Amino acid sequence: MGRPRTGAPVKFDAELGLTLYGPTPTNPRYRLDYIDTFTKERKQPRRTVETDAYALWDETLAYLRSARLAVPLAPGAGRRGAPTCDDLFDARMERWIDDECTKGYINTRRGRYDYRLRPVFGDWTVRDWAASSDGCREVLRAARVQGLSASSVQDLGALMRSLVTLGWEMRWIAPGHNPMQGVKYTAGATEQGQSAEFVREDDRPEFAAVEKLILAYDELAEKTGILWLPERALVGSQGGLRPGERDALRLCDLRADELAVAVEGAFTWPRGEDGPQRKLPKNNKRRRVLLPRSTMDRLLSIADRRYSQGASGDALLFEDPERPGLPIAESATRWLHTTAALAAGWDTVEVRRQEGSRRHLGPDLRPRHTNYSLRHHSAVWMHEVAGFDWTDVSRSLGHHSVAFTYAVYVRSGADADERNRGRLRSM
Image 1 (cartoon, rainbow, N blue to C red):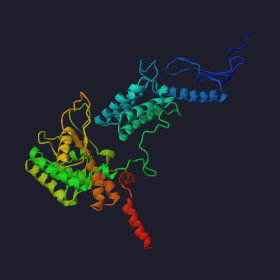
Image 2 (cartoon, one colour; image 1 turned 120 degrees about the vertical axis):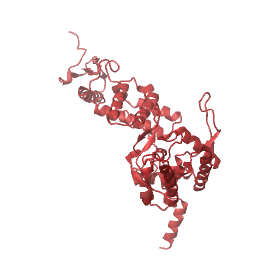
Image 3 (cartoon, rainbow, N blue to C red; image 1 turned 60 degrees about the vertical axis):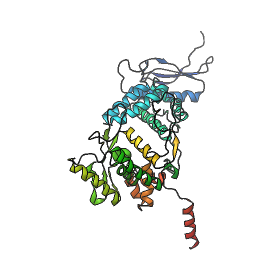
Image 4 (cartoon, helix red, strand yellow; image 1 turned 180 degrees about the vertical axis):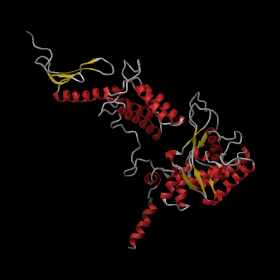
């Protein structure tokens, strides 16, 4: 009688059909034997070291237990019957729809998945994807090499992390498996306990530059017939409203007695849609934003003119003259900002164009600071000019916490150090 080719079972789980066989004199390896719940294929992985074999047993046991509770796939779904990352993203899409997320929110994440994630690991089984961090690291590496901004890289990481969370919830990923384990996708911390990126002084326009921009908008308003252009810029530079929040202001949102505007919504321009979609402000932060009396008087003048023309309280404050009930398009806003900023003498950078790109027209230079940078200017303006406490600045900007506002805007400079030394010398 020959020697046995397979050792005696050292571990056995009858319920899951999982067996770990020990080594033999002629075959010094442990062998795990089971039927994969998803693929229905027989698996027989082997390990030479005892500790590795027992670790594989624990890992496979957890996988089989979770797979047993997984949501069943439709017939023919997935590769060889196993759920793929494409299947996982489809489930994520269904969850967003059930949660009544906006079309813009869903379409943005669909685009990120289609153009960044799917080419790398879309056809991998979820278990293969979860077994290592290689796929996630490759997505982020390619994004950084191609020059995506830190915020865009963070958006990709957040999307992959949401897929991991759903995979755990649906039991498609075994406990202990995490393809995002140790994968860095956020900007480095700039303050203890904070991961926000500090907005430096040269990343926002100077006070004098913003004043010149308002004057340039005054001239541009007369040329284009869009009479509210300077007022919309003032709301951004003094109140800190995001561009979409400015566009969504209504006549009834003016609170003259409070010197405030009510920020109740925002506009977004989702890809593939014919027009803008109205949504809640970011972080669902409905709020009152205080403005100077001079700016409020200019806004009330616009409202009085609109009311006299028969507009209702729900009409947009900054309405497109050519399309009643709608804001001007994002492309028009960019063109107007570029024109006004160049006329105001803002710092410029060269426009980088690729051969064959549709963006082959327009000036060869563009302003270094975008329309959104008026929001960054407003944070410092509210604190240094209007005298707001940073807590009030944070509330006006609609940030989720004052700590975030501090991390983004507050830094002590050399002048602050000198003032502190002066106080200490007198003590």
